[in-house]
Length: 358
Image 1 (cartoon, one colour):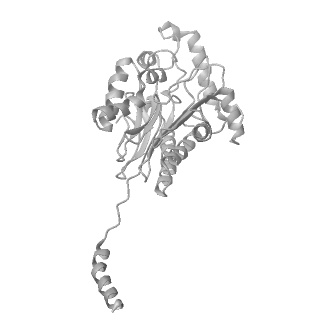
Image 2 (cartoon, one colour):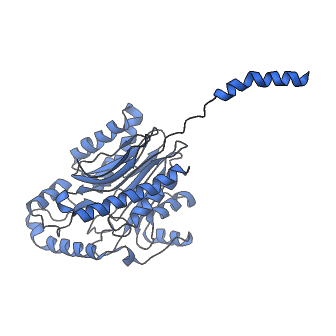
Image 3 (spheres, one colour):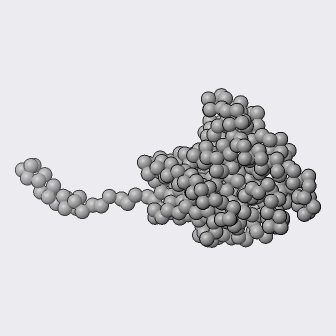
């Protein structure tokens, strides 16, 4: 009798079990940037453009593969940025711009949207991957930011790979610095623009338009690399890494390692990484402002980012752009300069790799 009841019970529940559908997978998304500024088609050879696009694709694929196999948003952000730090086409790690003294000084930051924990480093000169060090600061120290010699000492304690400063420096960067320094002493001042590190992008770009050879023939770009990601668990993360501005002086620090300015992530709103004239991004607290607009007004990610990049930032005289992703996997990448190196795969699987405004 017990066997009969068991068989009947099985028959009663089996049709229901057979029609049950597996829960749909949560979306994943990744976006990255490689700097924004006066990036014009006429200044990029077809070979250079192809190389930059290939580097963007490589970084995008590296980070997205992490998400596809169930990795965390933090892991994806770090993997993406480490590829960009190793590429000579961007201003982070290998190929970083130089200080006025001819050295490379690197900054980076990372933030976890789940806990809002963050780590940042500035003035790094011998750590091969600044973004890796920033994450160690977040996860293995009680601090948010370490700078200079202290950050280098911590890197040594963590066993991170060290290199000589020359590892980051390319011959063309030395030449760009030489020509910039020469222009500062000659015609550059005659145009009323004493130093591109301390003036608005509009004034500097106007000077370049008046004299294209002014900055040593170099493409004028507010160089930074960054990534934002959404993983299968619904967690967001953001990271940013940079060499700063060409010819920077006095230990200058930009927005990239400043949490809330160039880097921010919060699962409730969005993850943001910025690139641009850092002094303005710090003053406007750009990354946090985008998140706050979403939180307090209910505007969409695209609306909030556009309001800051094309609104308050422009009103202050700041140039640049951001990449951002929200908990639904929506991606936006607004910028107010002629170009921004960027790439993304959003929550619907749409893939974008682009450089110019159009």
